[in-house]
Image 1 (tube, rainbow, N blue to C red):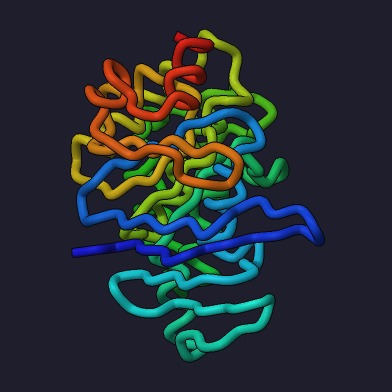
Image 2 (image 1 turned 180 degrees about the horizontal axis):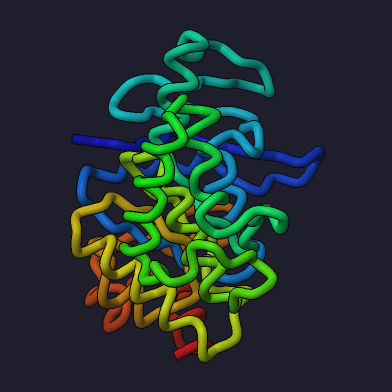
Length: 252
């Protein structure tokens, strides 16, 4: 079952075309990693899926239901408002920056969305938040404020916050890029655990070891296009596209 699918998704900022008819499909339980050079359109693609960026043209399907269809910066059709909101909430997103509320504890940061969006009671939201803090290895940090947490710990709280909405697919936009090298492993460990549990994930990453170990498929993007898509072994040992080979040779 396709949890997420795009058809000819394009995005332009004025005359600058950032995404050029990108079509992908992510099936239930898959981990798909997107790699490529800076400026390839990877983050814009993820931000377009949950409408942080409004697409110029193309279709987005969530749970095999049409979420949005736009052409030439005009909406052709979309899900009805209540259904649109429901489908949007099927996607959880973790950003490069942690974006935690500094005046809220780790526990409170996780509780907010379930209470205000899903209308969970405080007790139920608190119980959910404590369970999720345990899942990301931070049970002992429930009452700490973000300023007293390391970058890796803050990002793990951000992952727990996204999971609190019980999404069907998790989008990760270079979640370790803002971390010191020694903190990267703890975040990737949580992500590997999610992958092992069967969570569907679409991950933009520069962490090639994670992509090689966790991904079912890897997509190489360049200049707003999908230049190559294959299983990890194929991608890393025998890439077909010369641009893919050049990129991998420069970083491995």
